[in-house]
Image (cartoon, rainbow, N blue to C red; front, side, top):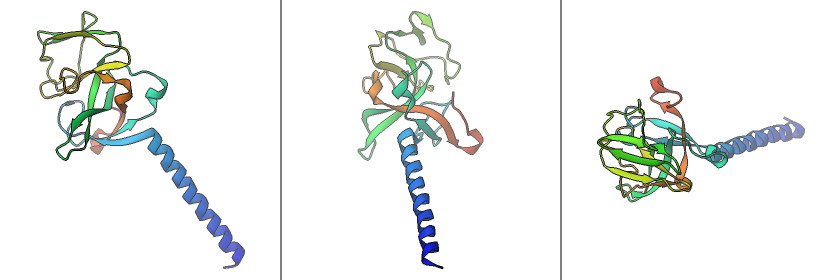
Length: 178
């Protein structure tokens, strides 16, 4: 192999490495993998589902009612690490949310929730969601720690890491999550 051929091959390798680094950087800035731990979002998401979240959308638009989001909390895992939660946005800034006799109301209108495991939502409460915060609930309300809990409460926009883009595993459930 001549010196010219070696230089050409080296340049091709460098281009491939730089391209891989750029692609990796772009992906790390725009998406993030996450693993579901627990059944608070069943039947929509189940324990050990592997998800990809979109980290970019909320830089350009506000969250929407019904979005399933990953957000950081002040909660800790058994190992002491910060704990992220996955929940569904039910109420937006300015919405009046109330839960009475097991029914969730937004702006005094009962909401229809075809995605919940059990239509009964425990807790009696009423509040108006403040600016730049959302109210979240798990789809499996009986076991979900969500905005009804003082430990979680209302979620500030800046705590939202992203919204669920796709489910990767299990393979037979690959695709968009609603």
